[in-house]
Length: 226
Image 1: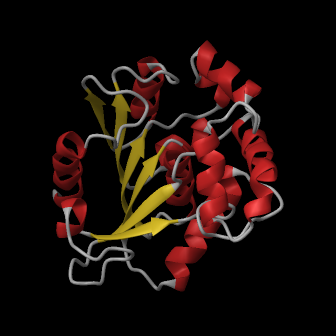
Image 2: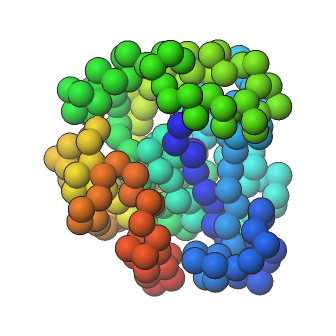
Image 3: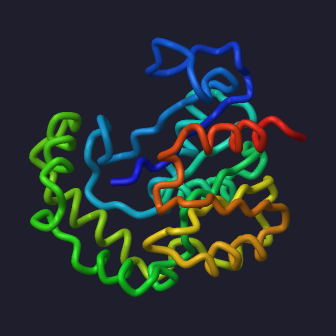
């Protein structure tokens, strides 16, 4: 399952969460990896939606008393990040929108079919093992899958109408070989935003963060420039 998002603070001197050694991006920013409700080590909740996940990130930023932050989002996390940027524009400096989409119908036919056919039985056993090893509610695996599926098949993930009103600078980040989302959709999102850059990674699929040597310099450059 995609990790929802990562919040970065601009205050480099702060302690890095869950890191014993500074490496990669943590040399440049403080990283806060977020386990959203029902994900990772966070307790389960009854239902999932992108709006609910975004509300939890907003609450996290408030609870930690963070100042202006950047959000790095991947797939589900890109969607969550865009919603957060809309909800608390005064708090979000920059957003990396990695391999996200506005709605399930924007997916390639094979991607949409995959979402519709998701069940605990068709997912790799490693997913279930990882969930049960980390979750405080290990017996909720099947419930988590079906709640996620319901979220993925919502008619609208991000309303296109909010895009021109996003105030922060956005890096729209896609792989040129994304197996789920067509590049035309990335271009559509980029064109609708008031202040954005479009970056298409060569020889890259949906997992845009899988190659640190390629992606980290791009992220550092985007996050550090005015």
